[in-house]
Amino acid sequence: MRRALIRNLLPLIFCALPPLAAGLIAAALPPAARDFYLDHITPLDALIMILGLSLFVAQTLLSWQALRWRGRGFDERPDGWLSNLAQAAEWFPLLGLIGTVAGILQTFSQVKEATPPGKIIQLYAPAITATGSGLLMALINILPTWVVLVGRDMIRALGGTNLPPADDGLGANKPAREAAAARR
Image 1 (cartoon, helix red, strand yellow):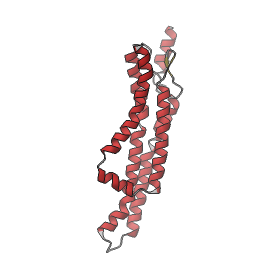
Image 2 (spheres, helix red, strand yellow):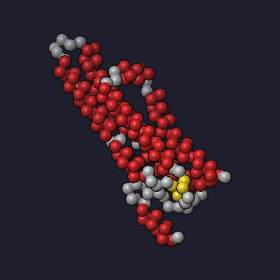
Image 3 (cartoon, one colour):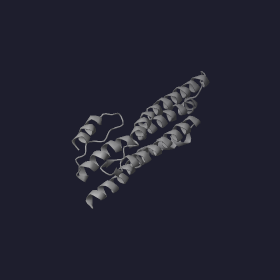
Image 4 (cartoon, one colour):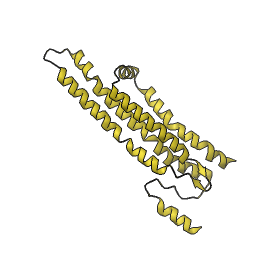
């Protein structure tokens, strides 16, 4: 009973962690900063957020599948996808940087000698929001893959199994799996 509970309930708990962490990050932002961000979202921010959240949902679903116990081990079919999607998260800071540069260029192109500081800050807002969007999406999109790596080890330890660690999608644990298969 304990083993079945660990193998069935823990994957759900682990897959709930990334959305909870994303919500915690959003809640931890100072309210004035969050309000400023929401009031100054640009189309590039919307694109970054839509792509990032889509990637996040896909990774979370694949993480749940990768943490499911099948027969004598984990379902390793999603591992390659998870590895590739985690690498895609590296693009979000770059998208944010493009928005930052565009916002700075926009500011410099419209600033004249007598431009008031308030107007300069208003023109500069897209640079800051794009940076925030890119960093937030990069941060939350590294969580699902990490959850699989940690979750599998914890499920193995709590479930009392002596199976070798699952392949991380990069072939790092392949020799251990092959040695275990040869012993059978």
